[in-house]
Image 1 (cartoon, rainbow, N blue to C red):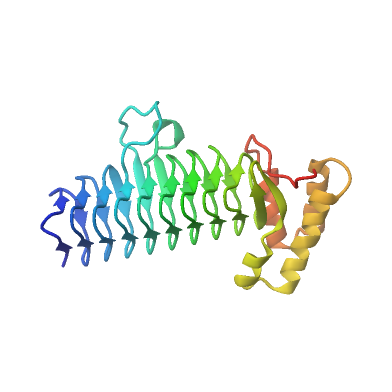
Image 2: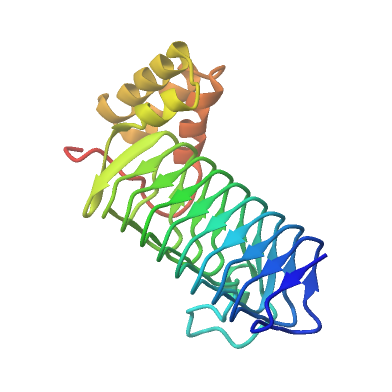
Length: 263
């Protein structure tokens, strides 16, 4: 059974699963799909071809699914897909995709988007990601699982951030961030591995030591970066965590990776 406040405006064509709660002064458009137990607390607007997974909670003044902030957008039927068990706090904005970017913006499960954060069009966000207050994710970005953004951080369009990375508060990130990396500054530079995050998530001492050795080989060794990465891949071919970094750097994304400040 759904619970809809009498002041909410919910289009008759919207699809609402069991247990949906829609608070005062919310607006839900005709192409919206709300999964089981979704809660819109109040003053929330959900528009466009937007799907929201079960048990996601959305707080006041969030604007979800409105037309992307892309001047090339011509009204194409693009979508926004949000997974399950997400926390979307006050004044968060998320936009659907565009024809030039694959037609879909996708957010995974168990993410937290704190007040004022933004997910741009055609971006892909993994699972267990945290956007602190006022984080800005431009269009066409790819953020992998367990990434944390400090408050006010910004990722440039088409940027990639690998698994378990940490982006320091107020950092402006112009290049790709390796898995497990820790970057800070404006413009952001690599200062090591996200060791605190790795320990909190149960990575063993052996795993962390392998990652530290690989980091030193890649970013502190002699010779060309490409050669150092290849050598690291050969040495740690059986280490899945290290290969996350190697494969990430070797992927032809068309842009550089964030490097240490003295590189």
